[in-house]
Length: 149
Image (cartoon, rainbow, N blue to C red):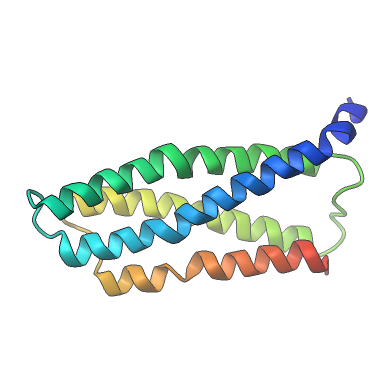
């Protein structure tokens, strides 16, 4: 079993990186769609609002959700690969915390999509501010993995 993890490590790592890139793209773009939805799509029967609703739903369901799942599965496989993670160091804990926060943000975005559909969404300004969170989390994750402090 250990040989299976070790021999598949480069492939799983590549899959993990591709999934993270896809997930991050969605985490950056969906709040931007929410800004447009909140500021320009007030009327649900207006064409811009219908287009935004379709874009938000497809981005979340077809790109972000699968990318998050693959990120988690590949990441857990990497963590289980012997000799890769030293849990006595700080970096795996900061990365894990940031990934959990990123997952929470993903779930929060899904809830905000539902809120926008019912007219209870936030303002465009609030979505702009929340759009900074995945960038901060990405910085923590990349520094943790590269610097291994």
